[in-house]
Length: 339
Image (cartoon, rainbow, N blue to C red):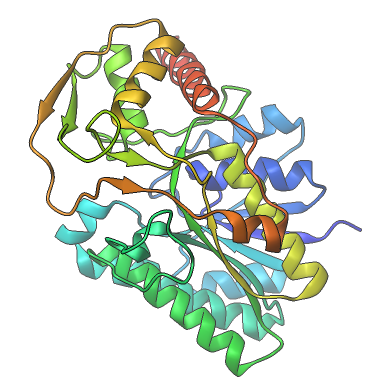
């Protein structure tokens, strides 16, 4: 019998791709989402990809009553937890909301899981817990240096899980620190869809390619990098989703907690990204060089060997795959909206 997984925030960008990866791996998946930051047509799109109905429960991860109802109606073998706010700039403006959702939601979920006897959790963390690291590629042993409330919530979330698994051997958690997710599913039916001006580079470039934004701002071209622009570790969202499946497999098979980076171990500059997207879209992508942003670092790349050792995880897709899948998604979605 297939093991049943609760996917909180499963209608979001990474959550929806992970849903598909889990279903493909043979898991029975239930989505729990408030749809505060996800489109309501995502479950229908997921059903189109899988050819199967999608079980969705609408609710807020901060509601113990709602979670108790979910765990009372079904038994679950594990939870993959995405439900959180995630915009760095917004977290500076609304810190209380971020602590409420990201930490209040996590602790409420853990209590409901514990009461139901479900004690395996994959946690969506972030490389932002490293702040400005001393070492790059950055290993999991780098010290915590969050520079904003969003990063602080991820640090505290990790600490909560570390304390919980140390206090109770029945618990096991997989903590996954993402670097820069990019791209879209190969079906072009789901992808990244920021509601406002995008915070991340690739969706911003995509909007420029579509003509919805005028030009790309490149923040600094005088870094000590090959072309002077910042270098980041971009990981295809389908590779990232597969990392969650491997983490879950490890928790369920061996009960081993783990903390791993999910990245490629290599970086691409802003100008490399623009050129790759130009090739994928066959569009001109005007950009302007502007001043550096405070807090930006020249190079931010994962040391990726631990994920390979612990989970057997390696990435398969390239920057070109990220750009072409993103362009296929955003153009097909734009066409659907016009119909």
